[in-house]
Length: 122
View (spheres, rainbow, N blue to C red):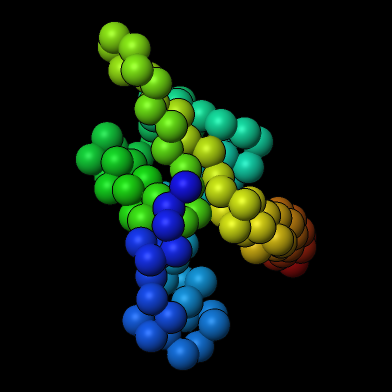
């Protein structure tokens, strides 16, 4: 686990709490990584397949999330090396952010579907 001195300093964070969240998870790859890790530990290849991110993008985002203390990386001393990623405790707490986003997304899709049906009847 990252030492607190390795995690962002409070003075470097935005004043607005919403801006802080967006800085930490404000791109689709990070949100998809969190979504997939909420169900448990995953290897790099599984995350790559599930998220659809390129290898370079996934590696960069995982590195940033590890630096921010959201993800923990476990390297097994094997040949070839095996690396697993899991959410840290603070990373798991993002479920309270991601799950309402998923609910809202489903509700919005339903709204669009109903609106389309209604508009076709007119």
